[in-house]
Image 1 (cartoon, rainbow, N blue to C red):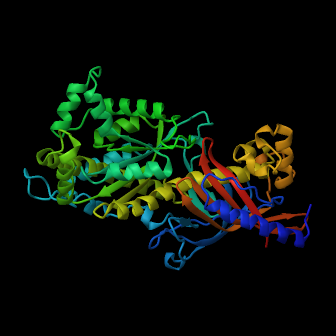
Image 2: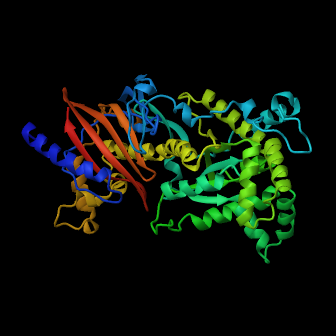
Image 3: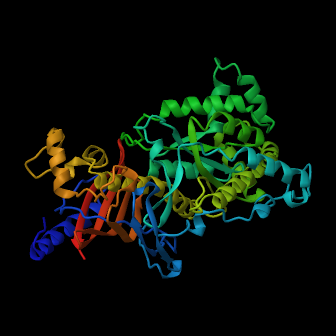
Amino acid sequence: MKLSACLLIVMQARAAAAFASSVHTSGVVVTPTFRRATRSKSVRYLSSGSGSNCYSGQYQSKLFSPIFGGLRGGSCSLNDASSAGNCGGSTSRYSAGRPPAGLRASTPASSAATTASSTSDNDKPYNVDSDKDMQRQIADAALASRHITGPSTKPATFGSIPFLDTSALDSSTPSKQHRVLFVLGGPGAGKGTQSDLIVDNYKCVHLSVGELLREARASDSNPHAELIEDCLVHGKIVPVEISLQLLQTAMDEAYKQPAADGSKYGTRLFLVDGFPRNFDNLQGWTANMPHVASCLGALVYDCPQDVLEARIMSRAETSGRSDDNLTSARKRFKTFQMQTMPVVLALEEVEKAQDAEEPLGTSRIRVTHIEATGTVDEVWDATRAAMDGYVLNDVLSANSRLIRAALKGDAESYMKLCDTTMFAKEDEDASKFGDDKLKSLFKEYERPGGNDGTDNDDENVWNTVISNASVEMQSGTKAIVSYDRTFTADGNEEKLRETRVWSHGENGWTCIFFYRKPL
């Protein structure tokens, strides 16, 4: 059923006005004017520039099966990042192609381990390139850790954009695995400060292994309190079994707790601060945790020793921590340099190996180095760019599932990914919509895909192309996905520009608004 061109123009003007206000009003659901969807697929992916993160590209892909494994074939041309334009404000914009360089390891492996000098015990800087035994240990650790990401994530494409499909990690799925990012850096590198900002903006859960250990040390009922105290004061590593037990308990308890703003978020990401600290930690995690949590990557804050020491001595004036002194700081930095940085290098090797093995060239783990010597705001700009890249996977996973549900005529799955308030008229209460009403709305605004007449669902021909897509991260809990959708049926072709606004809430990422215009 088609609407007249005149009516569509009027509808589009009204929807565009509502959409503009919704983008800048957090938590507000705006009811747009809808039109029955046609089909197509492609997406554009965001990048970083001065003051904002911008990436642009064009791609087109014919859809021969539901999106995973997905929008197959097609072509991709990626524009130079400098020509992407100004995204403005604190947004990030992404397009097809490999993840932007700023979201990948920015510090060469060898230089990362030699940034600072050793402690007073050894004035000679440690250089991993000259330590053949350590190089062998790194290679062995990388090989043993190749499954650290767990079985529930997989590289996928939306249009021609590669991303990591995290659908199986959602709380509604049987696995219910936690999403985890390791946060690593020397003592005083600012991991806690940046983690607090991530929590505020992305509604993540921050778990500092150091804080968990200090809480356990202070607990009279903890049988490991004395051992933990000895390790912390002398800069030694706490046994991995103790750390993992504390981590798993903390994740299980925190997952369903509301954030500081009182709201609940269904797709929460855990920042594991200060872990894994050594090969033993890494081995312990790989052996015991992948069924509990999927490691998506690591944020590594790089900072030289003299800056770290100055920060720790300043912090010691108010922290009251027994390990905030110059002697302990230097021991901790040497421990980080000699034990933790090799772990980072091993994770980078896992990333490289996965990149090489995957047909899409997309690894399931991403290690991001962040220069931590600047101001809090400067470091936050780099941190935000990295976080947008990780969260983008959840946004595209949700958008892909929604389109797949629409193509398959699956009204139930489709509506679970939508805030039904946007379908309600002024005098309607969306909370009272029954199944029949929701199915009716689905049929009104979406159109199932075509079928080639076979009984094999995987052989369905969906007659759909998506192209010229873009994804813009408006904040840590709101994103905009736009793309051209072309649907061909009975020899006729219809092409629309579709825009969807996604918001992270109690049920994970849900579509709170969408509108279309004819092309």
